[in-house]
Length: 128
Image 1 (cartoon, rainbow, N blue to C red):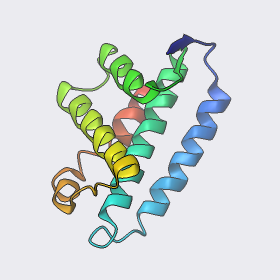
Image 2: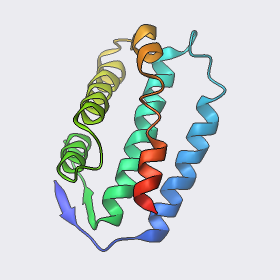
Image 3: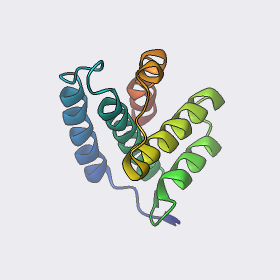
């Protein structure tokens, strides 16, 4: 469910601090050994950054389909290309299968998309 809220810059700052912690954390993860864990954390980072963007726009998502709605809301704002939206949604699906069905995220997926998954610059450009 998408809810209209008052933009909360303090909460956004806290989200960004947590995101920085995750970014530092995954820099220590050996992608060859823990590729699914690294992919899961990429998704969490992207989700937190998108949440910050949407929150600054005066919206938040909640409930069972919150992540899917978050991505849909982002695509309507045209902040990201269709390719980036598709990659984020694909990662969401893979992360959910990893968490709820124990299906690993392939190493080749991370190797092929690692640079594309670093969307922080795009998000930061929109936060300023």
